[in-house]
Structure formats: structure tokens, C-alpha cells
Image (cartoon, rainbow, N blue to C red; front, side, top):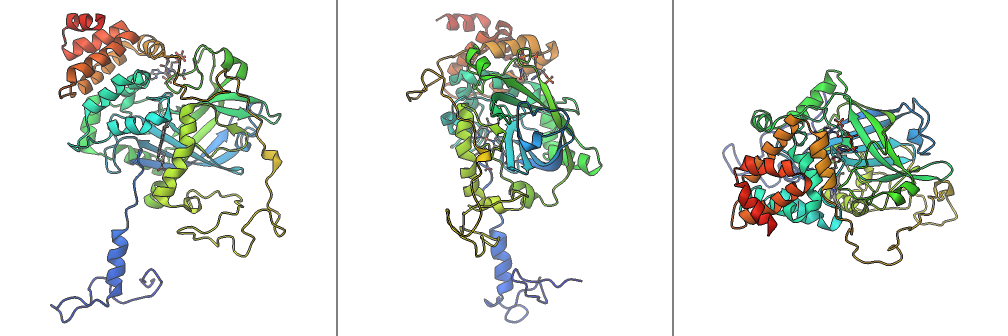
Length: 494
Ligand code: NDP
Ligand code: HEM
């Protein structure tokens, strides 16, 4: 038996009855155990993530299966067979912490690799593209995915108003509105790093790269009706599915593949290869296998290991780099900032976030510092006492600014505005007849909820985008919504 104690370790005899003046009398102020219990309870909630608040995570192992050292000197990509511990957190995007797992939404696919060169976070989604291409649009976009300020309800009007006013969203909108927008839990979907990153080899040669995690469980989705039903039956379906699969030893796996593009190819590329609303063709940039990711252990405590986990695209290790992708650049800043607010300045010391290998620096103090804070060692650099030094082995190759506008700066909105070719190809060439039917049905189901004085305007603006991508897509949505095609056509001609 262990003694029950206060937070300061003082054992006591009773946890359920507060001291009172007589059996029926008022309570005594001196019962500090009551204060401690209620006060700690009052502080149990921390801010939820501003996006991706509802999530599930598991630990696992990444194993290299193919030699890619010609591209990257990252230690985790060393020889075949090398293993690295990982944490993978899945999530929905727009819902609150208690929202249902089967909402139509992209799914987060956030990985932390605990490498000997520090933690590498690859914070991606289950889609290879995104809704916008400039980080400045992100807060506006997310506001439309959350609750209306007046009704406090989700609003299809806000959603489609934003989509229709930002046609670069179309590619991701088609992914979202297909049945892959309601995946069957987290095990049956792919993960994508989405952005363009770089790989750097031992000779400091740099290539651009995209990361793809292909599910070995096979793609499986809910239809819209099934997802709606599951929201009522088990709002935590995906959490339960992942947890129970791992508990019964059915460990989910993904194959990591990369696409590689040289700087010369990037220069010749017909569109900006750093544009997050577009993919790189598999035919031109074939997938190259790297390794296998397996999830094999559930966290023991959700709050400590999942809610307090912090992933950030800024955390990048030797042999891997960022790229000029504007969205990625914006994210480098946003995540650690969010985590200092959400978890406190010393969040990297929390066990789930702590690098299991050496950490040496001169950061000291701050709220909730609970290691020895550097003890007696010097807290400034340079100093004459310790042997901690920056290591030139980790110097990154200089980056050239080859773009003709790079020697000036401005708000360089993307000059190239082809928002339609890839969404059109996706509709025509990738989707089966059944997928197309489902996509059109799902779009109509959502657009039917647009209301208010701007309804017609929003719907018509979005029709234009569908038609510009593919005539049959536009026609399909028009027919499914029961709108008169003649009136749409004549409005579009104007
Ligand atoms: P490919 O034909 O080589 O690739 C098509 C890709 O689409 C495959 O990765 C396929 O893999 C995936 N796919 C199949 N069905 C669906 C679906 N219902 N929803 C989402 N993805 C699906 O063509 P390209 O590389 O030339 O790309 C053509 C179009 O395919 C792109 O415009 C893009 O819209 C889409 N796409 C491309 C990807 C890329 O990185 N190049 C990645 C995903 C989609 P799987 O079934 O295993 O997912
Ligand atoms: C979470 C910002 C785009 C995937 C977050 C968080 C912020 C944020 C502030 C919460 C972080 C935390 O509290 O720990 C942004 C901004 C973006 C952007 C400003 C655009 C500029 C993207 C894109 C992807 C993505 C393009 C995927 C390709 C994720 C994921 C999480 C997340 C998966 C959850 C991480 C976790 O599991 O803890 N984002 N985001 N975000 N974001 Fe983004």
C-alpha cells in the first residue's frame, strides 16, 4: 500500500470529507487539502491547439530499407536497417478537442523522429496539397473552417465564400470533397510532407524533395452517410481504432517514398515547384522508396504524451533543409510561437518533446523550468569554463537566390495563376466513375447549406472554378444541385 499524499508529499488520512464545524456545519477555511484539490482541478485545461485540436498519437519505429545516402547525410537515413524512434500524431483540423473524428476535413500527419542529431518534425497532412499558397491567408482561411462569430455554428457559407474567392484552393477542395475527406480512421490513409523540402548529402549537394507515406493497410474511406452515422455512434472512432489495433498487435505501417528534383529541374519546371497548391507529377519525378514506418506502442497517458506533444516544421536536422515554399517559411515561425503560448517557454523539456540525446545550450530559467537548469555550469557563450562549441560539421551549404526577383523584395503574389490544370487532371484521370459521383454528391451536399443574401453570388462564383477545371465537373455539380444549367451558362458568359 502507498500513502495518499498532497502534491508536496504530505500523507493524510481522509480524501472525501472536508473539515466542518460539526457534522452539518459550514466548512473550515483551514482544510488546505480541499483548496489544493479544487484549485488544481480548476487549472486542468490548457489552451487547445488553434488548429488540429482533436488528435490521436502512437509511438513507433522508422526503419531504412533503401540506401538514399546519395541524397541525404541525415543520420536517420543512414544504412539500410537503421531504426529511429518516432511519435506520430494524427488529427482533424477544424474541430475542437471534443469534436468527432469522422468530420469531413483534411487529417494531420505529424511526425517526430527522435534522431541522434536532434528531433526532426515532419508536420504534414493526408493530402499532398493545401488550400492556400501564402501564410498570410492562413488565419482568414481557418476562421472560415471554425464557428461563425454570431451563430457560433459551423457555416458552409463562410467556407464556400472563402473557397470561391481563393481559387487556388480548388485542388485541395476536390481532395477534401472526395471520399478521402472522410477516411476510415487514421490507419487507412496516406501521409504527405506536402511541402518541398531539401536533402543535403555529405558533399553538400542539395536536391529538392517531397515526402510521401503510403499506407500499407490500403486506402479505406467512409462515404458521407457512413461518416455522419459514425459521428453519432462513436465520435472517437479513429482514436479507438488506432489504439485497439496497436493493443492487439496489429501494427499499422506506411512506406516512406520520396520524389527528388534537382535545382536545374526546378529552374526549368513549368510552374513554381514550391507552390503548395500543386503536386509534382509522379511520371516526371518517380517515387523512390526509403523505408518503413511502423506504429507499435500506445502512449500511457494522453495528456502528457499527446496533448503536450509539440511538432514544428522549424525542427529540421542535418541532411534535411527547408525550401523557398512560402507556406513552409510561414510555418517555421508559427508553430514554436504557438507552443510557447500553449505549453510554456520550456515545452521542449517535457518528456515527450525532449531530445533523448544530448542537449547543450545557454537557455536558462523561464516558467516551469524543472530540470536542473544547467546547474552550476556557465550560462553564457563564449566562456572559459566549458567545452560546448558550435560545430562547423553542421554548416549548411549557402543557398543561391536564382529567381530574377530575388534581389528585390515586395509582396510578390504568385504571377502564375493556373489553379485549374491539376484539379482538372485529378477529376478526369485519377477519379473512377464512382469516385466522381461521390465527389459531386459530397460537394452538392455541402453547397446546399450555403445561405443568406450572398448565396447566389457565392454559388455562381464557385461554379466558374469547377467549370474552368473540367466541364463535366461543373455540369455534375450544377445538375446535382438542381440549378438550371442555362442560367448558369448565361451568367458565366457575362
Ligand atoms: P499519377 O496517376 O501518377 O498519380 C495519381 C495519384 O493519385 C496516385 O498517387 C494515386 O495514388 C492518387 N489517387 C488515386 N485516387 C485518388 C483519390 N481518389 N484521391 C486522391 N488521390 C488519389 O498522376 P500524377 O502524378 O501525374 O498526378 C495526377 C493527379 O493526381 C494530380 O493532379 C493530383 O491531383 C493527383 N495526385 C498526385 C499526387 C502526386 O504527388 N503526384 C499525389 C496524390 C494525388 P493512391 O491511390 O495510392 O493514393
Ligand atoms: C498545427 C499553423 C499550414 C499541418 C498547427 C498549429 C499552428 C499551425 C499554430 C498548432 C501548433 C501547436 O499548438 O502545437 C499553421 C500555419 C499554416 C499551417 C500558420 C500556414 C502558413 C499547415 C499545413 C499543414 C499543416 C500546410 C500540412 C501540410 C498541421 C498539423 C498540425 C498543425 C498536422 C497538428 C500538429 C500536431 O499534431 O500537434 N498549424 N499551419 N499546417 N498543422 Fe498547421
